[in-house]
Amino acid sequence: MTGKRFDAIVIGAGQAGPPLAGRLTAAGQTVAMIERKFFGGTCVNTGCKPTKTMVASAYAMQLARRAAEYGFSAAGVEADMKAVKARKDKVTLDSRAGVEGWLDGMERCTVFRGHAAFLSPHEISVDGETISAEKIFINVGGRANVPAMPGIDDVSYLTNSTIMDIDFLPEHLVIVGGSYIGLEFAQMYRRFGARVTVVEKGPRVIGREDPDISAAIKAILEEEGIAFRLDAECISFSPRPDGVCVHVDCATGDRDVPGTHVLLAIGRVPNTADLGLDKAGVAIDERGFINVDDELRTSQPHIYALGDCNGRGAFTHTAYNDFEIVAANLLDGDSRRLGDRKTAYALYIDPPLGRAGMTETEARKSGRKILVGTRPMTKVGRAVERGETKGFMKIVADADTRELLGAAFLGASGDEVVHGILDMIYAKAPYTVIQRMVPIHPTVSELLPTIIAEMKPVA
Image (cartoon, rainbow, N blue to C red):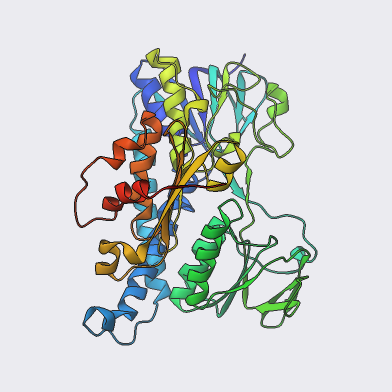
């Protein structure tokens, strides 16, 4: 082997890479950290941090528009998109600088700014410089999927990354993709003042969720003026003098959806194509995700893949948990595995959807005898007091074992309240534990015992 040798190389400064470098260097190891663009990964630069900052701006504007409901006046609420972007940029840049500064000042860590590519199972080229290590950790994340749809190369389009760079309000934003990313941007930009149309290939939005959740979310967004074109089997694009036209083959409605701008929100792909993984003997699947075992090892046992690039989680919290699993096994003698992780995530529209464990649909398909309890937010005192009564809460349990299987909380504080169920799922506690607790009033969480007490068997 040639070039400088380290104990470990970490490729990518996303959510898993920097804390892993911190643990390895604290254990006395020398680490090379390689980042070719922005420190902090998707979450800091184009994902959670900037989008939720903009969601907060949109929420504040919407609340101000409802001022009369709360007993005060706030006329003339309009978005200043340059100010919205400036606020978002500050949050992002502060976070990015924090990660970069931490790594630059980390003892025994050498930061390389450039593109990494494997030369062999132990050697990495960084813009022409060769380094090597006994262990290598890949944390390269993913990017927006841009499939080869007819006409896509003939039009200008935005992705979740490039839309972060605009400081103006699109007159009519057509969003292709009715899942988590698409719906968050749809509500956000509608509240900023844009006309918004969502084009979705499937028969309903966020098809991963139960039908009642999907229907409720669509109704909430339609009430705010967002238009939907579902069952759009054949989607194509063509330029227009004033923007772009999205062509759809739907059962009903006009087959042309003209807009000033189009946002592609149709999934993510891993950043693995230019890593030279074949030279390292690292196996990938048909979509380019790196195959890993339950401890994040690739087909080369000394090479690990963490975060979005392994296809085993698509969230900041799952990427960070990948770090925890690797660090526990390598440094702590603590056996932690991917298989121990439970499903948990949120959709950050307003009101948010908090999800944990199985959906009701999944529970039914499991063959178990299940109990289901629901509660509309109109019957939650805290939601009524806050004037936020859209949505409902649902809990699913095993009728025989009393095991909590999952929950979907679409409503005020749903992304926080759902952790009460997630805690019980991890603890493997029966639902009677929550049923008998005495929660604080007035909160949204205080309804958990009531929902559980009212659960009914379903066929």
